[in-house]
Amino acid sequence: MSALQTFVINLDRSADRLERIAQSLGQLGLPFTRVAAVDGRQLSDDERIRSLDEATYRRRHGMSSLPGELGCYLSHVKAMHAFLATEADAALILEDDVQPEPELPQVLQALLGCPDRWDMVKISGVHSGTPVRVARLTGRHGLAVMLSRCTGSSAYVVNRRAAQAYVDGLLPMSLPYDHVFDQGWHFGLKVRMVSPLAARHDAQVATTITAATPGASRKFHWSRRWSTYAYRLGNEWRRLRYAIAQLWLERQAR
Image (cartoon, rainbow, N blue to C red; front, top):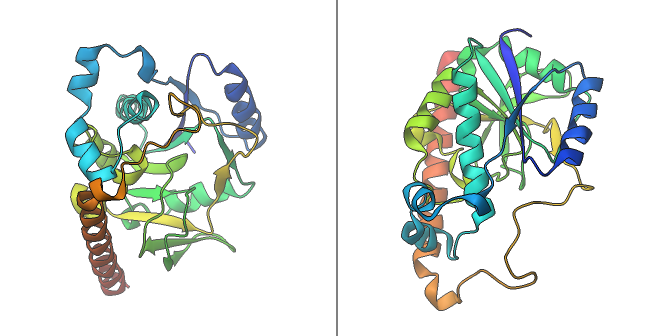
């Protein structure tokens, strides 16, 4: 699949995670390029200020941000730059804690066969996304529009149009990466998901995005989260409205 390149985001200190995913991808015949992840703990105050809108983050997410979240966010932007520096038509972006399913190569090949149907496709996720299938990919997998949220960013495919839109519009961070990059209505993109998902979180790998004080709650008291509730309600309405419009476009294209 020369039209597609695979990128794995990996912290320098996480050699064991790189070895684990390299073995999984090797078994599937998927060569990859490593993207050295940004360590949020090593960012300077100036870098953090330029890259993060903390006030908006707190208003929309109802908690304070973590250095690891900012590092993750910037790592995905870095992966987009790495992809755009190649001549590939599409990129598979993976976090190093993902476990691809055996059918992933067939799913990727099918996606490359219908490039006009998508700009970004989620391969893994948390929450169902309430998928509505719009195209067949393999005997088991389909391309779907999401009616509800499906967080997680451990595996997804982007084309050059989507990567450029992300490079141009993602910064500064005002939400965790997996809460914003699937907002097709904001970026003007065809956002889809694979149903059923073709990758999952590797349960044997612990997250590197952790609170400074283990066990401490980052969430603000409910009385300080009214703006968050309002934002989320509005965001899910925009998601549903976008999904209905996308389903109508899919129907018109048949």
